[in-house]
Structure formats: structure tokens, C-alpha cells
Image (cartoon, rainbow, N blue to C red; front, side):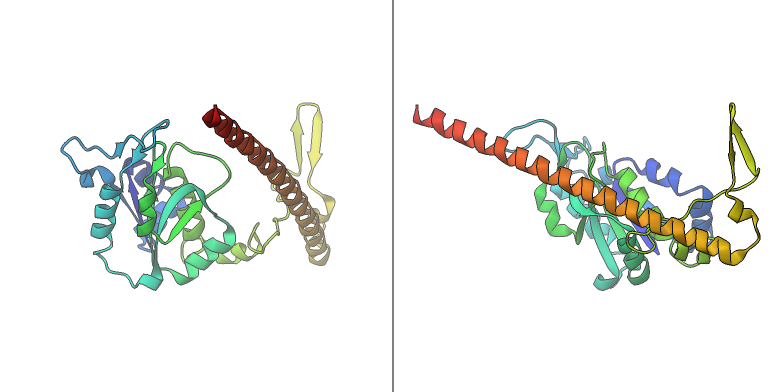
Length: 262
């Protein structure tokens, strides 16, 4: 599978994917990760990629033209059928990335192109050039490079030949919606942290495969409950914050109207 990343810091991408499991996958040509320096498509000799926002405000906004030129060049070689390729803009406003999307992309796509934003954001018109706007969570990063590596990593490990044991993929966290993996233990049997000792659960030492499977299944069920609990708490918090934000916005609008009347 081919992953291409448009960024102003290509070394960040190249370094991450040159080592470990994904570095070996690249050496075997199972996956290919290429980073492109956006500055080569800057519209002036100074390599300028950003400018002040219309309407005022803090920060700088990445210009649309260099991104358009970059995509035009990158998509020209190699050519991939539109249904087998997506252009993704990494953005805090995007769709939340999850394991189900990773599985879908790994199964159905041959190529992904990532646009890594910086500064205050990217000119809104860039959305005319993309297929998806993706976020990896409800937080803000200094740039899209970390998000790109997260998404590529989550997809690449699902591609046959990348991991040593593909069977482990079917039992890990999030392989099914709401399911978190059971706990793991390794040697020694007893670990001492200061004066406290922690033992491996006896069932895992029993050699009784049926009992071990039952214990692991029980751990999965408890983790499903935990996942549901976290989701419910998060949803309630978001609703409360949205109501507060809406109330504050209404007050600002009313105050503005009052000033105009005066």
C-alpha cells in the first residue's frame, strides 16, 4: 500500500517509518511511505506557505495554491483509480479516526495522500481538493504530522505481511466495536514494587486452556462495560459544554445588538 504525506517537515515522517516493524515492511515493499516537502510548491522564491487570515484574528493560515500544486503533481504518478485512493486533510474538525476506519481503508484502498496542516489551520478552500477530513481525537496538535503517522501505523499493521502474527489482530482491542483486549502477563510470576508483591492470576498458570479462555472472556465483558461508561460520561460532558457555549454565544450576540442600537 502506498502512503504519501504532504508536509513542511518531511524528516519527521521519514524517521518514524524507517525503523522497527514498519521500517522492515518498507524494506520488503509491503508498504511504501513517501514524504513531500510542501515548500517546493511555494508560490514565491521565499518559500512562503502561509498568510494572515481574512477578517483578522490570531495566527497564520496555510495557503491553498501550494497544496493544490502538490496534489496535482503527486496524483499524477503513479496514477491510482479514484475509488482506491483518498486524499485526507488532518484537522481537529474532522471525522474521528477509529479501528473500523483503519480496517476499511486497509481492505479497500491502495493509496492514501495526507495533507498536514500547520499554524492556525488551512485555507477552507482546500476542502474542495480532499476526500476526507480526519481527526485523531478531541485535542489540538502543533501540526498534522503526528496524526498522519498514527493513521498510517494503524492501517499498515493490518496489511498482510507487515506483522509477524496476523492472528493476533483478531483478538486485540477495538478489533470489534466496544471491545477492549484482556490483560497480559509475562515472567516473572511475582513482581515486587518496593514492599508490595504482585502475582500473575493463578488461572493463567493452571494449564487449563478452557479455564484460561473463560477468564479472558470475562475480562473482555468487564472492559466492554468500562468502554460504555467512558462513552456515557464523555457524551454528557460534551452536551453540557455545548449548552454553555451556546448560551455564551447568545449573550455576545445580544450585547452586540445593544451596542449598535446605542
